[in-house]
Length: 109
Image 1: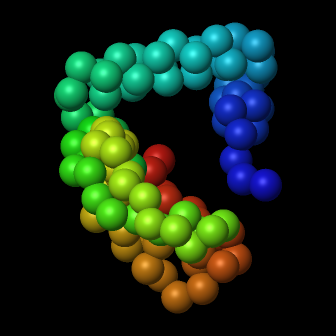
Image 2 (image 1 turned 180 degrees about the horizontal axis):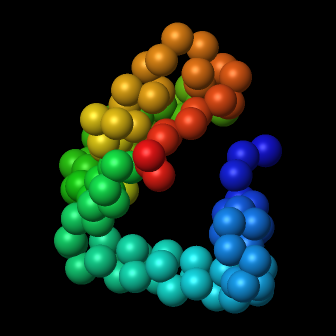
């Protein structure tokens, strides 16, 4: 299992004990709602030293149903894409870092 909102809230609480876990969850709810609103309005979301989220239109295309092998048309839709920042890309490309789960971004340095 990956990182959850609750895990992030615990990390916030650990970094600043004056913020309770429930307050951190509420804060994250506000942050994620802001991100969703921007994306829904077609705006980019740029998070310094992390990356950029944006919505792209996907054209309809021919696909294959994996269960039956039959052809199908995948409808036109919107997709959220993520482009990591150069710092994040560098961390992800470090030898063995992604397998060990040992990504220390050094953001506070």
